[in-house]
Image 1 (cartoon, rainbow, N blue to C red):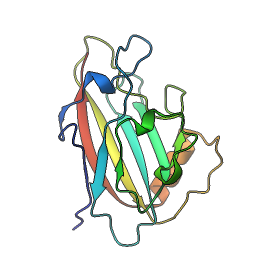
Image 2 (cartoon, helix red, strand yellow):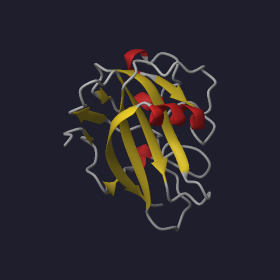
Image 3 (tube, rainbow, N blue to C red):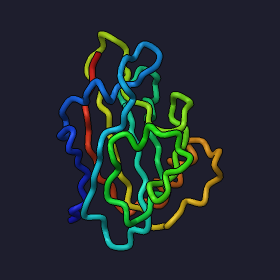
Image 4 (cartoon, helix red, strand yellow):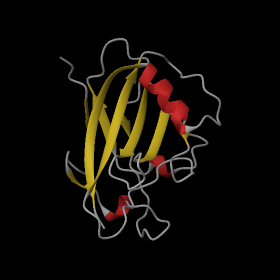
Length: 164
């Protein structure tokens, strides 16, 4: 039984995300600020972390990947609010961004079509058994996610909800 858990001081599991988290493009009017996330209880053998943010309810036939962050040093146990909103060029121990499904590097906040039902935004931190994935900087998010899943020892999930 793992005690691996992902939490946020900004929202509880299954609670709504805030307008500040909403994407600031297309017809979104948020600030595109990633939430403060923290985790604990990673399993023995964890050598790095990765974080993904996925909306399975997006009307695409395959969901929508909002954030892919990998090669996070094993000493890191939290990501400050707004960290994902950077251009991803100097994250240091906080990892490396892959392009999201908006086609941008970094965090891309929720922006479900207006009037649709609530969407789930699934933040997943992956405890990885390797210190680095060893991928080129231009690896697609599908390739990055493949290597994340290939090296995952355990996951912790936090789901935020959003509707416009």
